[in-house]
Length: 161
Image 1 (cartoon, rainbow, N blue to C red):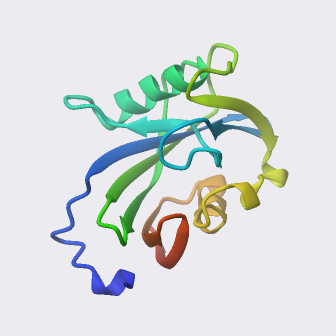
Image 2: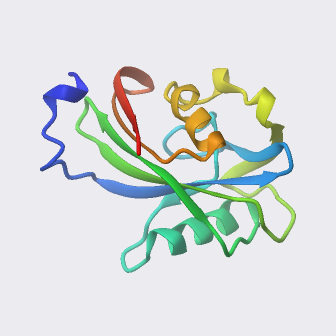
Image 3: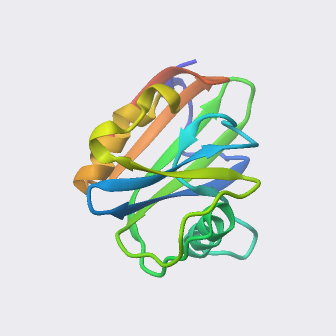
């Protein structure tokens, strides 16, 4: 299955979710997921949008639930369209911020860690991350379309806006 073989105009994701990248100088807040899709991998905090929530409300709630950090101002930086060969599909919206309150704290969902942006552990992350995170770091708004077979990326298209 290739990105070009999917009719994205009628694509209907099972879940809509968010990711939030919190910056502290030259460091970014990442997590090691303890459960759910991608358990064991390193990612940014985030999660599913609940019914009735805006994307921003979900991003703020998920960040607080996962690592006990509160943010108020988010900048939208991109979106992902993930199609898995088993039929699962997810639309993920990516945000970033440089202001937060609270101390990142481990929860039953995630282990938080500050990582230098020069030392992002791509080998412990989803395969697509090394392709689009550089856009996010530069503040370039992007859209990505991906096909995955479990955790193996089969095809990808990324566009700048």
